[in-house]
Image (cartoon, rainbow, N blue to C red):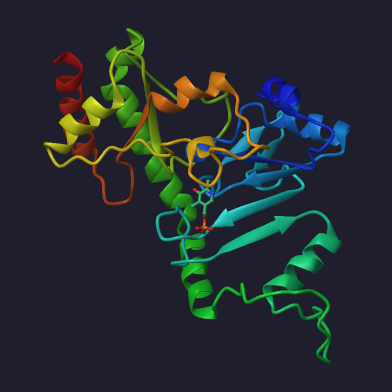
Amino acid sequence: SAHTIESAITPQTKAIVIVHFAGLISPDIFAIATLCKQRHITLIEDCSHAHGAIAIDSKGKSHKAGSIGDIAVFSFYSTKILTCGEGGMIVCKNKDFAFTCRSLANRGLKPYEEQEQFITLGSNYRLPEFSAIMGLSGLAALESQLAYRQKLSLAYKQYLHTFIKNKTISPQAIPSGFRHSFWRFIIFLHKHSPDNIIKYLKSYHIYADAPYKPLLHKQPLLANHPLVSYVPSTQPTIENHISLPIHMGIKLKDVRFITSKLKEAFNE
Ligand SMILES: *Cc1c(COP(=O)(O)O)cnc(C)c1O
């Protein structure tokens, strides 16, 4: 939340990266954007889960993921909603920053110049044209894909209704009018251990998963880093979630099967 972020800001803070987790734009995103503006901190949206997701501000205006912060990044890796196989995209509001990105991506050349002028220490981060063709056809199919994922998510919630009601689990809370991309369908487990549930489902060849473990601050690169700290209150949330299968290859009858096995796992 904006409050948690505010308490973590120090005079050294230059930028804040926010991940629209599982495809839901952070419900607090507008408060976070305001906070960043007041403190002159760059807000970077990581939209790798959130292609096509929408947030509604307090005036009822809708904003697509990637249009709220100063900079946004999208991944087009093969597991994402919109994919080019590999690659990604940076979008930003600042022209100078865009100019620098173009140069860095293209061996440090000055963009839009006929004559070669190297102005930065760039590399080759160009998206191949063949990949871009794949991305464009994915873009054309994005709306129908989002609608299908939405339909699967509603089926999950309907079949799991009793467990949501008696607080065995809870889905992500989606503010009214927001569009979740449902790159992943997350449930938070309040009475069971994720490992046991995942194991039970796996015995029926259902691959649920609990991503982002161990957390970043426990990874070898950062575990003992003097500048790394974390917010302890985030730990239970992260440690108690699983994601259920959701993609274009899943049918409504699969959701019914998966949820029936999940019910067995809860009742064991
Ligand atoms: C996939 C993903 C990335 C990495 O994307 P690449 O295309 O591999 O660079 C970064 N952040 C999040 C949240 C992701 O899901």
